[in-house]
Amino acid sequence: MHQMTLAEIARGLADKKFSSEELTKVLLARITQLDPQLNSFISLTEELALEQAKAADVRRANGESGALLGAPIAHKDLFCTQGIRTSCGSKMLDNFKAPYDATVVAKLAAAGAVTLGKTNMDEFAMGSANESSWYGAVKNPWNLEHVPGGSSGGSAAAVAARLLPAATATDTGGSIRQPAAFTNLTGLKPTYGRVSRWGMIAYASSLDQGGPLARTAEDCAILLQGMAGFDQNDSTSIDEPVPDYSASLGDSLQGLRIGVPKEYFSAGLDPRIAELIQNSIKELQKLGAVIKEISLPNMQHAIPAYYVIAPAEASSNLSRFDGVRFGHRCENPENLIDLYKRSRGEGFGPEVQRRIMVGAYALSAGYYDAYYLKAQKIRRLVKNDFMAAFNEVDIILGPTTPNPAWKLGAKNSDPVAAYLEDVYTITANLAGLPGLSMPAGFVDGLPVGVQLLAPYFQEGRLLNVAHQYQLHTDWHTRTPQGF
Image (cartoon, rainbow, N blue to C red):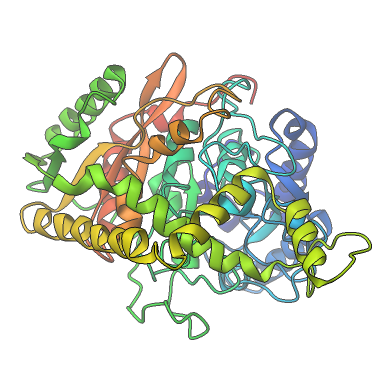
C-alpha cells in the first residue's frame, strides 16, 4: 500500500480494494517504525487521522467521490491546524496550538484528505537544508548522512521514503523545488496568490507560497486542485478561476517552445548535473518540443536582492513573537524590555536571529534606500527579464540546484554557501511565477532535479510537461534503499 501514488489510492478507494481507515493504519504504523531514522515529523495526529479516515469511508459509502476523499497527507508545520501544535520548527512556538485551520488545511479537509501529522521544517522556513529546526535536522532517505533540502525537507523526506503519498509545503525562495530535487520528487510552487496564505505562518509575505510535494506530476495536479482558489481572508489571494489541472496532463508537447537560459550553465553548475539537464532537453525534443537559447541578464543580481527583501520582511513579520501574547516566554522577566530580549533570544535559533538582524538593518534609517529600495528595483528587472523571455518561449527549463544534496553540517559554518544553492529557484519567487522541479537522474546516488518555469497561472502547462516527461522516463519511480 505504501508504494501507491495519490492517483492509485484514489482508484483503489473507488474500486473498494481497501478502505481509507485500513490505508491510514498501515501508513501510521510505517511512520512510527521508520521515521526515527529521518526525523521528518514533528507531530503525529493518529486520532484525527483515524477519525477523518472513517468519515471519508462513510462519505464514499454514501456515494460521494473525489480524488482526495480518504487520501492520507501531511502538512508542513507552518500551516495552522486547529487544536494541534503548529510549531514552525521553532522553540518559540513549541507550545502553540492554533485556534483555527489555515485555508489550505480547511480546503483539503473538506475534500476528504486525511491528515497524518505535521512535518519538520527549517525554523520559520529559513534555510536550505532543514538543519535549523529546533527539533533537529531531517535526514535524506537517499543517504542519511545528507540533507533533504529546506525548508520543506520534512515533507520531502516523508514522501520520498514512502511514509505517505503527498504533503503540503511552502516555497519562499525554492523551499518546495529544492527539496523535491534533493529527494527525487515532483514539487510545484504555484503563481503568487494562487494558493491562500491565510493561516500560513509568514516568513516573507511577498514571496511565500504554498504548494504540493508528491512523487508524480499527476499527484501534484490532484493536490493542487484541492489547495488552489481565491480566499477573501487573504488580501494577496487572486480571484482567478482554477482550471482542472488533471484534464490537461495528456496534452501533446508538439511545438512547445522551451527556453534554456545561457546564464544557467555557468561555472557554478556541477557538470554532471548539466549533462543530466541536457539529457532531459533531448527527451523533451523527442516529444515534439522546440528548444531555444534565451537570456536572463539580471539573474546574477537575484540572490543579493532576495537576501535583502526576505530578511526585511521576516524582521517585520517576526516582531509579533515577543513573549506577550503567545509562544515562548522567558522565566521571571525583570521588566518589559527584559521580557522581549530574553523571550526572543531563547525562542529563536541562530539562523532566524541572523535574518532578523539583517532585515532590521536593511530597513533602518539611512539604509532603506541603499538596500531595500534598490533590491525592490532589481526585483522589477528580474520580472522584466522573464516577461521578455515569455514573449519568445512557452516555458523555461534549467537545473533546480547547482549541486546535489550536501552532507549534514557541511555548510553550517558558511551560511552564504548555503544561500548560493538557491541561485536557480529564487528568481521565480521574486517575479511571482509558477515553478516546478521534477526528477532528472542521479549523481553519486543522490537525486537531481530539472526545473520548469511558466507564465503566471500556467501551472497546468508545467504539470502537463512534467507528466509527459514522466510517461517516458522512470527517474520518478526510483525508491531509496531501505524504504
